[in-house]
Length: 128
Image (tube, rainbow, N blue to C red; front, side):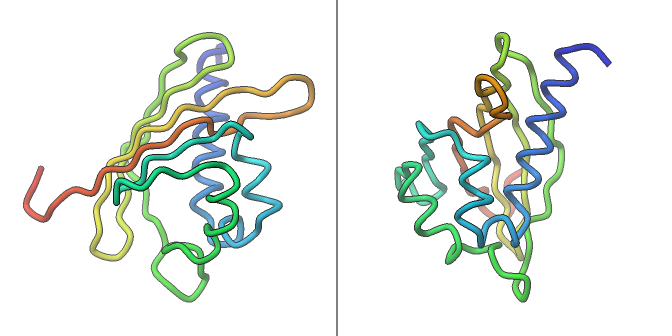
């Protein structure tokens, strides 16, 4: 694999980890995958920061082993610049379908890939 493919694969691996209920329920584990400058615009339109997301993520849908889990599909990515990857994908969580866009950046030194920005858009029933 080339470097661009490796970088995209690292970002995809991080994205999949953030969908794992055990990671979502752990401030420590989720904090390792979110950039300290993280911002999200959620499907509700709410803006989330790093601290707000870590504080509330354990109570969000998909964060319990006993509840529906995220089912991702069509994950693809592109290297925007060295150390910067853009991913797009869809998820199903129960009956809710959502389209996602996230930007991952590589930290310096031993710090790995972290999600810098995320946007989710709910897809209404019947929309292709």
